[in-house]
Image 1 (cartoon, rainbow, N blue to C red):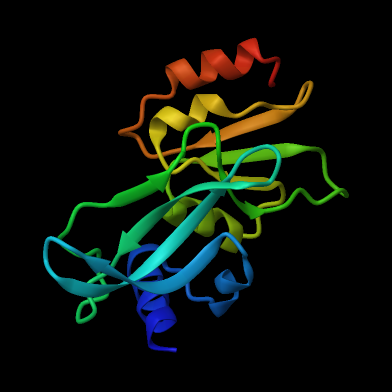
Image 2 (cartoon, helix red, strand yellow):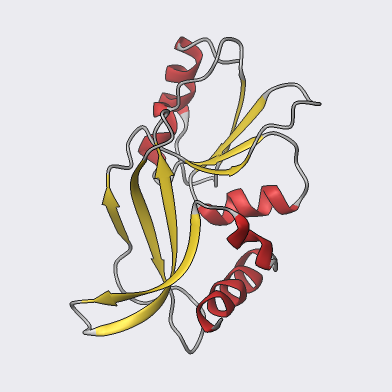
Length: 164
């Protein structure tokens, strides 16, 4: 499928990830999106976010240039409600202590998954959403974000929610 090839090429070029298995995740879809401003269709990776009840509340659409497989030169789009919802990239393995890794972007989440890190891996989509996760009692949380993301508020909120 041409569209998933664009996504795989983007991930390989920018994160070192190459795996068609990412599309086994029901929260990730390769598709085409139409941009009204440019009047063009673009290959895209759609990342669905779900609330605590498991209901899809929104999505982030990462559009790609079909020739270069880089991010397209159009504004990123989010639809629906992102706040308080997350894209689950990997589920917790019951053999290990409960650790939840929360990232801001899909590239970081997929890189952590490919590295074989055990734990629940969530993508918050937006930095402001990091603080909206509701951890279980004494749940260990790791915020895996780039240096340009200020996590102080999220760390304080999660600590107040009794995350470790």
